[in-house]
Image (cartoon, rainbow, N blue to C red; front, side, top):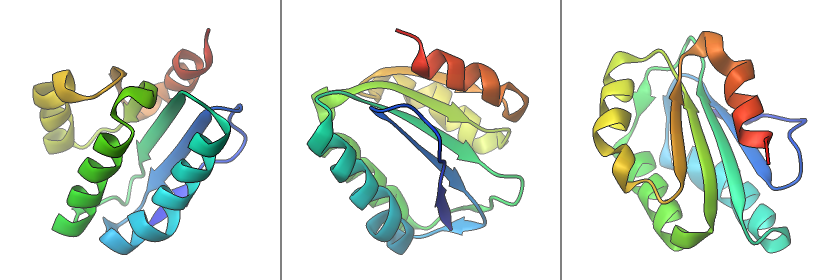
Length: 121
């Protein structure tokens, strides 16, 4: 399940992943929110947090994530991934160079720091 993180400044979207994230989560929550934000902003920043109960992504969710990133390839400004999930941190470190934006990885305890980094000018 994906929940939107409220209270972020204009041009910044945020999502918290719970349990097993599915393609339907992307199609029903992330994609509409991101598309609406891009309709109002030329560049976009994203905060993505894995909750304590996060268990992973199904293959469809991973595919939807890749498609979303590619569809707006040059429009991402900053992306912060906040997670303590070992395999996800390893994957993000290995493939961070392919993220089409400034990308930083944070531990769950650094959520406030991640939010500050995203919102600074």
